[in-house]
Amino acid sequence: MAIEVKVPPFSESISEGTLVSIKKKVGDRVERDELLAEIETDKVVLEVTAQQAGAVTAVLKAEGDVVKSGEVILSLDPAAASAPAPVPAAATAAAEAPTPAVATAAAPTAPAAAPATAAAHGPAVRKLAAESGVDLNGVAASGKAGRVTKGDLLAHLATGGKVSRPEQRVPMTRIRQRIADRLKEVQNTAAVLTTFNEVNMQPVMDLRKKYQDAFTKKHGVKLGFMSFFVKAVTEALKAHPVINASVEGKDIIYHGYFDIGIAVATDRGLVVPILRDTERMSLADIEKQIAEFGTRARANKLSLDDLQGGTFSITNGGIFGSMLSTPILNAPQSAILGMHNIVERPVAENGQVVIRPVMYLALSYDHRIIDGSDAVQFLVKVRDALQDPARMLLEV
Image (cartoon, rainbow, N blue to C red):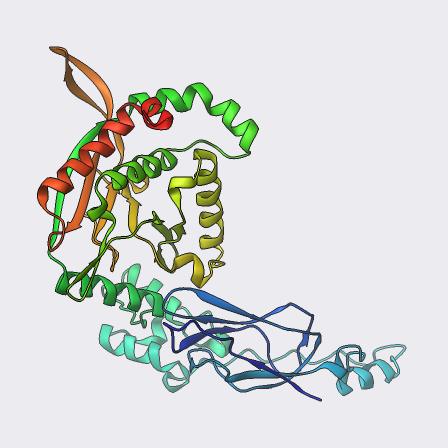
């Protein structure tokens, strides 16, 4: 009896997804838990796996199809899981045919492939050739039967033909569409303003250097900068609860907990997994969770629960070399902190010019509910906590 492989249930906020890949075709053997298909939603890529072994008997959806929860993607025949693989008839006949003892005559040499006519080349090649004014008969061909491939034509143009200006049109992924929609929604609804400050990172760097080996040995993870920022932000949010709030209609929702999103860049787009209840987390807890999020994000293994919620976000453009930016809000949150690269800069201390590792900080916030005084004081508190991390960690 055939088993139907269906689209898994989506969360309440997702109604459909795009089938981005099907890993099997009709006749393929499948092992239990083997990956069969991938479905991209607005937030994550869901993997569809085989619940038991079998052979694919039908594929009912194609890559690129929009699918809904419960729709059948393909079917499996579990009875075929243990059956021996069929031997093609041609191979059987060849195996049973007698081998001649001596060849009586040399096989005739295959004639050279005749040059392909213009019509034999692919439509994309013909179109590009027409636009570029190139005679395909003068292009060195590497395709079958003397056909000119697009690569052949582009190489010809690059080495002396007419200058090529190729373009490629690809549809936006669902995740990219969702990112675009959310960011545009923020611009249309929130009154976004950004305030800046700078922080001397020397105290944090000294602390990391002093305890890095012991920390890594005990906890199995390196002590990074992000855990200090999460701790500093959490303490600042306690002092300025409106920064941790969100707007719902004409109401302000003050959250009595601290769920901080950490922006992670992946090849499919930016995702923001959530650290829950950061006021209860140690530096080690934060570093372990961030490391796990990074690994799972790059492997497209984040779940919907990992990405939902959040009362505040942190994004680190510094890992890509950004000096300064104005981060955009992650709705419905009302504020986001932007970290940047650390650069040695001359600063004045006690009437002397000294060199210090400085990072510029940026806080973007929704001016509808957050006044400039709250935003500035919040960012100053974050700065002060980072410049005196011992005091922050001792909660004094």
